[in-house]
Image 1 (cartoon, one colour):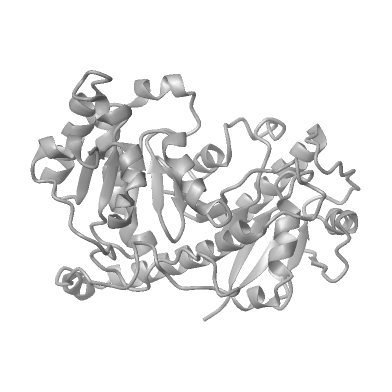
Image 2: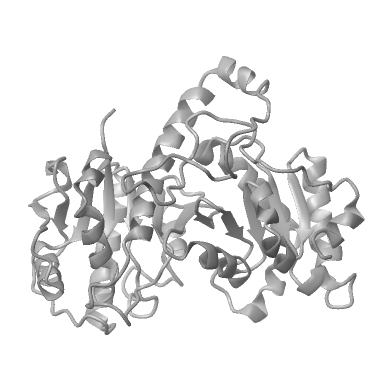
Amino acid sequence: MEKLKIGLTCGDLNGIGLEVIIKTFMDNRMLELCTPIVYASKRTTAEYRRQLDIKDFSFEEIPSVHQVNPKRACVLNVWKEDVQLQLGTPTAESGKYARLSLQAAVKDLKEGHIDAIVTAPIDKKNIQGEGFNYPGHTEFLAAEFGAEEHAMLMLSDQLRITFMTGHVPLNKVAEGLTFERLIKRIRFIDRIFPSDFGIVRPRIAVLGLNPHNGDDGVIGTEEREIILPAIRKAKDDGLMVFGPFAADGFFGSGAFNQFDVVLAMYHDQGLIPFKTMNFDHGVNYTAGLSHVRTSPDHGTAFDIAGQGVASEASLRDAVFAAIDLVRAREDHAEWSADPLKQFDLRKLKRPPGPGGPNKGGKGPNQNQGRPAPQNQPTQSNVQGPEVDVDDADDDMDELEG
């Protein structure tokens, strides 16, 4: 099987993006899995290595994406001029080159010259400029690829979690929560899981919005008026959706292990538990795009940039995830093109399976949390006791003891 070409954007040049990219591909075993192409410049990466005193690694400069060396980590010159690095300090210049790197990588991805992109962290303020007027990567990529619906989906061995709202102020969250939007998001999750993770009819856990699920309307009514009706409708349509669950008890009790994916109502409700469990190994995946994009789950880390202490684990796992997702989509396209395979799929039983919902293959490094989709589609790879949600009233009180 031909190795995939993975494009990597440099992120903010004064952050830790290039550091974690370099550290990832200093392990030559990574080159057995993919051919990495960094969108930056040879001069800039060389200066970055000099400032970090990294002497036993270098990128191979390539004149075009069509002339990669599959045995080396490559750098494609997006710009030729010298760039002054000020590691640890975001500048207008570092934002500009982060933007140029991203735009060049997306162009090549659209044109089919690379198979996926892994984006290093950006500073959401200084990257703003010509061609980029978005809150972050996710919104930019959705616009570039014309994705009518998309979602930030966080991946790890322990947990997959996505969100009803993303980068919006907390006081706007409830405004954006409607029955129509919620049922649409639940259906979206159910639709992408066969192709991206090889899981047909995934078990979807839906969190409540308010503390204690609103305490039957005392603290809030969104659970009773919006969330529970959407869950009931999704169940009527045949989807495996459960909840709503109060977030504190849901995560504190470990109940998340019983599900393939969790739908949180807002950014921090899901990301605080996710990063608590997976800070060094989480992966951010933009679901719903026509092409695969992943990223590490951390930011630019200007506070430690230039010190040589940044962990590459999350970036490495983002590369693993990108490879797995591309392969999973290829597998899905193959079996779904055959009506007989689709018929056989409906006969599959829920496998007992070892491990939790996201246990998958491992990559080099003994593998530290590689979120790997299954090669063959299954009904679900959840292990653990069934959650009784036949009584809708019990949904409101589940895990609240």
